[in-house]
Length: 283
Image 1 (spheres, rainbow, N blue to C red):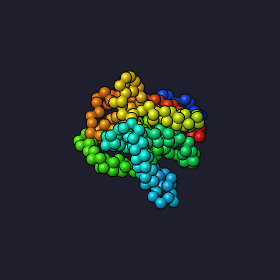
Image 2: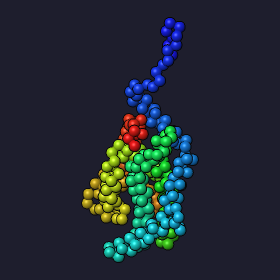
Image 3: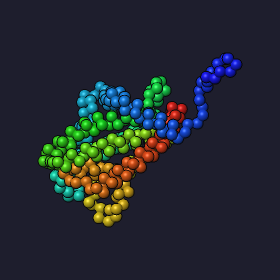
Image 4: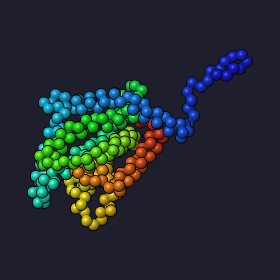
């Protein structure tokens, strides 16, 4: 407000000057803080997504458990018969790997549409964008919890007990949660701008499923084992899977996983802070 000749002139109604990099970063971090403050809404929306997906069905969300159990049983019998593998060693490994990969694959694929699928909410009310990324994470954690039942049953049948090693899976799970939010922010932003991103990422994830140690053990690669470390999902899976199978995850695997996470977060936050203000206009 400026006084000229005794009168008061109004200030600018809308400031259209470009934001500085510092202001963009501050607003992006504020968006994430506000999203974290709405964790109850995240839980409610994620649970509603799961319920609506299986509305009217007999078993409800436990269809996830049943379908996962059938797939693991069928694949275990097939591969142990074809390749003469001991089912006692292979089935716990396969059940754990498939459930973990199911979580990773769903978060990555659904993360590409986390903003476009919430177009109605984004257009109708003012909510932080990070909420929609967290909604994808909550939804897939609930699905994961349903599928964990299959792992527990398989471990009980084959008497697999990881012991104290299992506690090392907890910090790894925390790293997964951080990576999942970063992946949703990064891929959701790209998916909102370029609608070709979801099918491209879906195709890439199918390729990564076969080149990652999910249905085969990493020990089977005798030549070129170092190339396996170029796979961004390798260390991420190993730091959770090995402790749950009663093995140690080496410091090298942790370094790889943390390095990948830092690179992912830098890419996600740089992109998100730059285009956050335009996201609503791209939908």
